[in-house]
Amino acid sequence: MGGYIKNVIADMAQSIKDAGFDPFYIERQEYIYQLPVPVIFKNVILIEQLLSNGISNIVVNSVNYSLLASRLTFDIELPLIDMGVDAGSVETTVFGRNFTMNSSGKVAIQRMRFVGQIRFIVNLIPRLSISARSSKIAFTMDGIESDVKVVVQNEDYSDKMNEFLSTTVPATFKEYRSEINELLEILSVEYINSYLQAQQNN
Image 1 (spheres, rainbow, N blue to C red):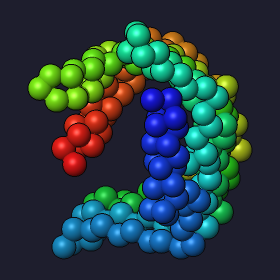
Image 2: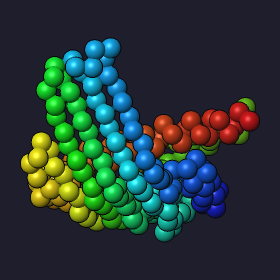
Image 3: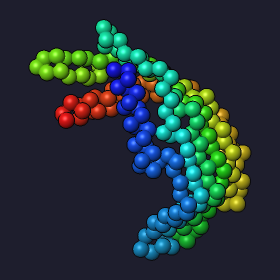
Image 4: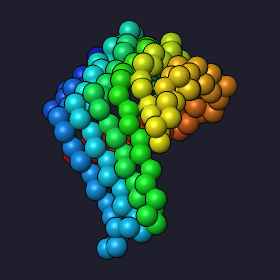
């Protein structure tokens, strides 16, 4: 079972790459949404040279399955996810009033780790079937490095944004760690059962 899970994770990582999400690159993209009368509302988003890496680099530190306990234990991590953009801008018009925001820089999320266990139910009658019964997951993140420049209406908010990303966000994750773990536990059971059901129906 442990080897099977490793293969599933490897397939997932390859699927992310094949879909073009790692690395993910946008040379230049403009998004425009406006009402038939643009002076009432118009929004233009411009992104240039956006690049992100690391989402498919899933490192399996350990995966073990106990046949007697029907329990899978795991230790998985994403060592580094980084995203940078050379230039990004938002120009919004609302009833003739213009609002602008310009940004650039890089953000790096360091070592997201998932440690836990998943318990399974194995039925032999009327045919072999496997489903996830429960999971316990502990999520940790080493930190976020932020070096971005943000200017809104010609006011520089870079320091505030960097503090928010590098200090406030990690602190919030720690404060709500139990709730985040609970959410991951619920989602993991749902995903695993959906995956197993699809495999068993093939």
